[in-house]
Length: 265
Length: 255
Image (cartoon, rainbow over all chains, first blue to last red; front, top):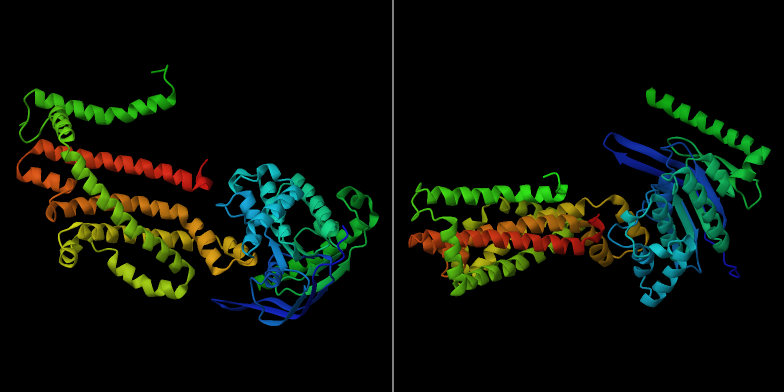
């Protein structure tokens, strides 16, 4: 594609998020500093409860930070961000076509334009034949394709993905991962991708942020050195892959153990 | 019955109890047990039914009752749905209306009839108003419950994808609550027949309730039964009609 514009640049500084619960305050995110370059594919891994989803929700505008600053530079883009949730979140009462066009309808795009762009998005994820189906008539993998199409169709400067393939079976996950990489390669949007799978992070990401358990902090940022295009087979053949995976796993394990010990105190 | 499919067998079984009851009733009276002046046989009722259909009397009363039910139903259900959705979307609206609903819902609506007669007189309006009030409460409560229980992810998605309040109202909250709204409408339909017939007993000169009450005063028990059966049939038809509409309007609930 000839498009030279790149996705959003994200600058997060001193980000802090507290939740007020019945017992008092819970610190979910503490002093997060993170810069994401335009067009970068950034993965975030961490033990469950490390606040990685909260970070994504703040970026999506669904939650507000308690302190710190988030700056997103997405000039030139009509839509700043679109999110893909773990559970597709396709509206059960709309068919695939209407679901995919939702983010265009809300923004006042003309019906003809919507039809055209939805058509292209459906082709992109291979759902053209299922446009009139309702979500309950689709498999989990197809629903997730729909959610991806719904996000891409709005042409967002950044794509926020919250464990989008975690609920899928292994085969579907592999297929959708490679399709995501393909689509991303064509559009070069900035992607922030939250996952609990180290393998997935190394397969998809340019960089991988490892977070600590509660409160969530940035423990390490790893540059993923493997050349694109990647797939699980080429990665498995790379000696560095196993080592890196193990290194990250040790960091995470240490975090999980620490968090558990603190909880039992 | 081994030659019949399970479905057919279910259907036959389904019909045995009502048909059996009618047969038993008929045979009992034919055997001279019971007084036919007070308890007419099914055959007597059928004859009377036919007479009332032919002279047009039944059609007039049925038409009047149906018109009152329909008008009152719409007049009660439409604002109930709108307000139920607003309650789910806006906390202040909910806090404002909650105590009113809690206080007014348990009042038997037929108890309001004298008040409505005072306000609207003996014409159709008082009956329609009664139906509307009776319909309003189950529908608003169901609508609110349905809208309040829409899964959080749908609010998140709508917000993230730039939905305005209007889009939220018309595309998310309304449709998300629709299955529960229909459950409420169905309850309301039954309730509206109940209160309307009761109202027609005393406060009018037309309608199926009037037909029943009037024939009781004239001791025309067979006509009374005709009225009762007609109401039953109307209930059956409207509820089946409702199910059809529901299937059309909520395609995502099917299969």
